[in-house]
Image (cartoon, rainbow, N blue to C red; front, side):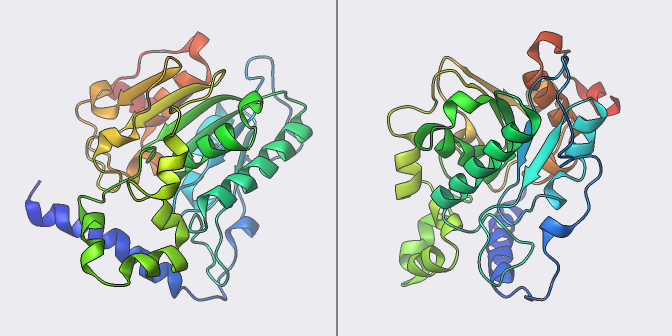
Length: 286
């Protein structure tokens, strides 16, 4: 990749942050948008798939747009599937995941309890994209979520924060920039590598006992950098690089969650390891 393209990608992310702050307040809320087969509160898990799946969107995402591909993919395979909105900022519609991440984890806690009460299941599985693959670990470690979750599967999660291709290291050279990000979009500030949130999240080990973790990363990730910062350490962890499954897969940070059926096939393997099948380039046709 040409150096100028590597620079433009993180700049585009920061541009999105600015756009979120000035988004029109009259837009419809994502929570009211229709879904296709998921968030069906009458769904009861089957013997084949006894645990409901909760999908956790990424930064700037929402419960519908982030999962227009993957949620129907799971429903078609017989899963009860649910998604939530979290991390909303006042006056900023549609673009979620911008609030303090510890507060967002509290929203996930409430939602998981609602799903378990509705389905009658004792545990759920969580699949998250980007921040949505990292934030649930706060719920597991600090909000008592461990006993309620069987597996956490992250698609390009920023488990150890991100440098945005080194762009975050420039913040000290712009007086007031760090304070502005922290006050205006605390969810972004929390995700910077070395932030107090990331330090607390990973203190004492990456995982909790009893939960199975899968991280699916892409070496073309331009948001979570370096991409291996997504990986977790622990006996109950499986770290996967997408290109090790299919060298032809060029998916970057956004595509791995929104459109990549190879990543989705590997996620389903983690949801149902007893019936896992090999993930290859041909998985795109399954």
